[in-house]
Length: 288
Length: 191
Image 1: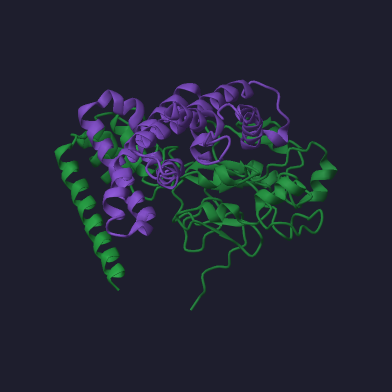
Image 2 (image 1 turned 60 degrees about the vertical axis):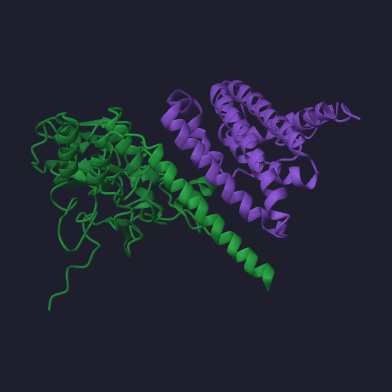
């Protein structure tokens, strides 16, 4: 019994003494910190997403206050945080708010599987062991690695086997862009208007694309030939739109034989209660 | 003579990383380049000696008379962690230059397994205070040596053609095991 009492008493006294010593010493050896570190830290959202490339918000705040990092790296904070940071640091900054766009429409019905994958159910494992589960080696595998890294509840797997971005929540932090083993996500400015091709298949063999996916880019280049502004070029097997020239005329969307061209402002980045990534999928809001 | 024996055996023969496989985490994690591994090694030396100087009397003059020697794990961890924190405060305020070169490694080794292993060794091997300090310096020097050796190897590995499956940590463990085999040659150096 006395051993227990001695143990308890000793532990309590030791812990108290050490805690007291730490507290006292911290005051004695207090070092003046740059007050801007605390100000910057307070302005940041504090979600520690790591999207800025620093170890959490504390790391980024220290780097900003030291002048070692630009003020516009905090994607979740958006424009308002950039402006506050710019005010604290006395620099001018302009920033665009970006959101993530999934550049694949290969849903369960539209893209065929090349076999029955029964391995570890993550995109990364499927990509490493089997080179992907779909006939299209570039397509979304649909195991939802991206939904797991999203800290803002902005990515959810839909019934069609594709992740859907909830643009009300997406902050453009870029975690899904880094996570997707297929590199299917792209960060696109929220306000951008114009056409985008929702396919990453680089195969130039038309029958192989057509066989793999009903909405794949078959490299017909009809979009390139028909664009009145001549703003579409083929880059590494994918048509790329020059947004400085694009007028959102919709010719490429109308002419695309496989419907892999979409307008960003019409159906891709959609701010509605029913979030959607590619054209359809999400059921409309229930009507009372 | 006895002290030299303790030092050599702690430094080379029973090298804490390569022979006893303790403290592998900072060994792999911090041996990115030679200056960094040197800084880490110095910080470990410092903390190891400090911890020995504090825990040895604590055990023999407090825990033993109170007959609570079984509390040594708890007490040692608490005391070492607090001590390192205090030293960090002190360095930050009084010797900022030293803090800049060594201080960033201090939090990494507050309750590092090597530090704790040394303090326990001092008790179980029945060293007196002077022997304990020599032992701690020896172990720390061994840690520093193996860190710098691996850091040197890593700088060569970075530019060498390595098979894909060995790239990264596997290659480091392969190098570590070869280093360990080399260190087996020191066995028998002290009778």
